[in-house]
Each structure stands twice: as C-alpha cells, then as structure tokens.
Length: 219
Image 1 (spheres, rainbow, N blue to C red):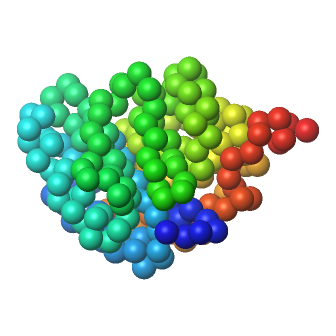
Image 2 (image 1 turned 120 degrees about the horizontal axis):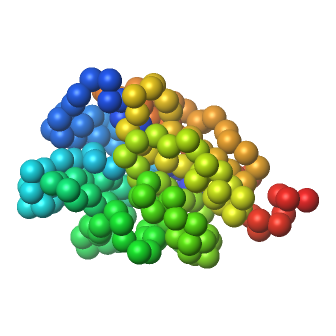
C-alpha cells in the first residue's frame, strides 16, 4: 500500500473482437502482473467481465480472479452477468471473501484499502443523482464506475462538480483508455499499456487529484 498516493489500474475491454470469459480472465492475470510491477492498490475491470448462463455458472468464475488478486495482495473490482441479471464483485486485502451484489443495488458500495476507501457504482447507479450524492457523502479518495458500455461522460462530470475524482472501467467499440476526471479536470494516465485484449490506464492519485470541497474549485 502506497502511503502518499492511491495507485489504480483501470481497464477498458474492446468489443471489436468478441472474446469469451476464459480469454478475458487470462488477460486479467496479465493486467494484475502489470499492476503488481507498479505497486498498484486496485485493479478495476468492466461490467459483464465474466459471463454465465446461470447465476451458479457466473459465480463459479469469481474465485479464480479473487485468488489471483489475493496472491498479489491487490484489490480487484469486476462485473459478472447471467441471464437477465448483472452483478458486481469486489475484494480487497483484509477481506475473508469477495463481496457480490446486484448492479441495481439502492446504495453505493465502499471498499476499504487500508486507511483509504473507494466508492463503487455500476453504470446504472451512476446515472442516479441521489446515489451520486450518497457516494459523495462517504468522501472517498476515488469513485470507480464498473460499467457495461462507454457513456457520454455527463455522469462523470457530475462527480467532478461534487468535488470527487472518478474513473470508469467499461466495454467499448472504440480504442479508448479509461478516463480519470478530477475536481480540477480530466487528466491523462501516468502509464498506459495493452495487455492482451485489455487497454490499461494506470493512475497515481495524490492530493492534487483527490477529493476537495465542491466550493473550493468553484471560486
């Protein structure tokens, strides 16, 4: 765990070439290796990252990714889907088991990373102004949106107006890196890479990017 900054790797999955869950899981291992090299605290993958024809099959694909993250002492977030349902998964060092919840949950989730914490929302949740305010009330170091498809950015901009940095891991038809929208504006990744079929943006988030009182940047 880095004391001066929060280091996150945020992935984007290209949908130009259809890829199955096994291929994405193999690429996830490569991303985790990449993140470990840069001593990252958290890796985020999109919604629908692992698919199943039933809830049982989808949940069966969770443990291998959690074991891979645990072996590297690194937090992980990703989405799972099965017939007409979608869920999010999160695990961080210190947790006995992964948390799994419905992407349409009526409240955001907070993931503790040592003394820091991040707030997790699905792309569906981040469209809800009430849930955005609830997320802001937790004063996280970062909001992470685990989404299905790239959005137009208005919801991310809304978090900026609330004084919070936000990033989004999504599936995309265009070769886009995951954004980091901070209270003082959007910025480029510190490092970017292609790991298999996954685009990776690494951000080292410090006090210059972190949460500020919303009134501070309006003046």
